Structure formats: structure tokens, C-alpha cells
Length: 86
Image: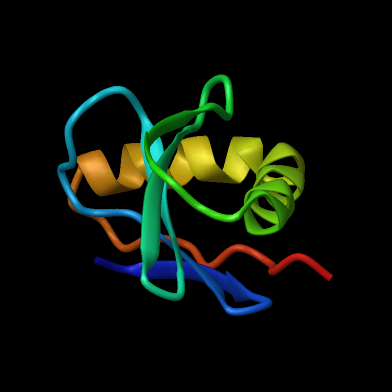
């Protein structure tokens, strides 16, 4: 699973040729969850609200880049690294 960003102990990644809907994976400690790229809702998993808030804040800023990476992943092409949350 290629890592595309990392900040405050949170790892953001995407799988190649993953299932729809378009989403990314976020891991924090032992928790992992899937976030929809289109509406930034949690598809699956559970995470502390503070970490989720940081992921959503980051994703709002990088939604276009996430969509581009989704298309690259579906085409089995290398993904772009995305700036972390500052």
C-alpha cells in the first residue's frame, strides 16, 4: 500500500486497483479507516475524533490531488506524494 502522506503519526495511503468508491486509507496507531474522496465521509473503521479531524482538514485541502492519485492507482501508475498537514 503506497504511502502518499504522513503527519502527526497518521499515515495516508492508497492501494493499487482498489475497489470503488474512490477512497484513501488512513492509519493512526492500531486504528485504520477508509475515507471517501468525493464527500470525505468515513466508509469504514473507527478512529479518535481528534485524528479524524486532522485527516478531514488535510483532505479538504488536497481533495483534487487525492482524486488524481486515485486515477493513477486505478491505472497502476506511480502515485504522487501529497504535502502533510502543517
